[in-house]
Length: 131
Length: 131
DNA sequence: ACTTGCCTTGACGCGGACGTCAACGTCTAG
DNA sequence: CTAGACGTTGACGTCCGCGTCAAGGCAAGT
Image 1 (tube, rainbow over the protein chains, first blue to last red):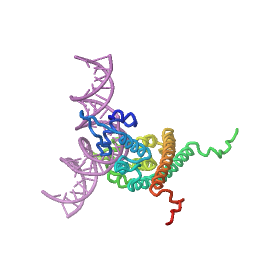
Image 2 (image 1 turned 135 degrees about the vertical axis):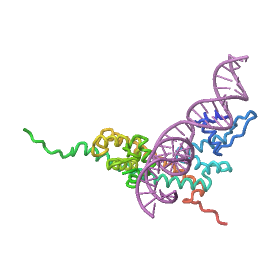
Image 3 (image 1 turned 90 degrees about the vertical axis):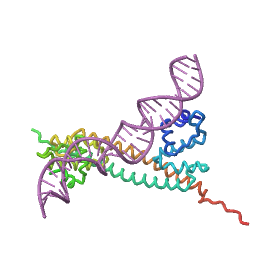
Image 4 (image 1 turned 30 degrees about the vertical axis):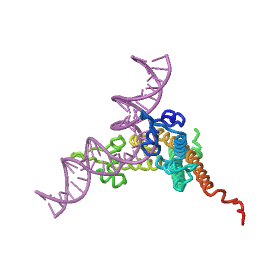
């Protein structure tokens, strides 16, 4: 298939596919007219890249998976280097979650503080003197 | 004080301070020789920007706080627009936390799956036939 | 006079993952 | 024959928050 079809079948833009190629993640053979020609294996490759991206891997980090697939393995994560990336990303995710949790707390505290200053002590309102 | 001192006292680089000015977040008066001159108010302003950045606000999002301080309020979050930013960022943080939590789960699952395929069923190993 | 250290503006660089445009070749249908 | 859809390469733009020069002006000490 050509680049347009691959784009349509994966939901990745043609621009992205060419970019992947420029990064050495995707290799297309060329037709006589210079058009890129892809096969089903490439389709799987792009899909692999896609799913890995959705779980937060950068393009660079998908490289071990791509190479693993290229070297004949059934899944991209059959290789030690891929598994290592999983581990790293898991750690990163945990670190990020921790940081973000802290930030969320600080943010909530700041909001609460600001609201408290805006309408001071709205829960224990002293009775206003009646005339 | 001049830009170098302000930088030293806040930990923000001079380059950053000039950048803030270019973005309209910081306004310095000029000495006769063209040097920027800052006062204590500016110091507070920069500190406000700093703390807001650590809780994830972009420079653009600190603008309401800065303007709030400039308009004479004691704290940057005394104004409705600032509080609105707090709310938005809190929502964003929650959304991000949810997404990231999901991603973490998927990553963990992928890792577990890959390990399982690598050493299939290491917990319930069928007894290998002994000769 | 000279060095040192501060200050000025302006312009370009970075990372990540492409989008967008230019300027053109190719294939297919009517 | 021509229009339109699709393909090609290359270069530059985007967002964000500055970093890093470049090429000087200004002030103070020796």
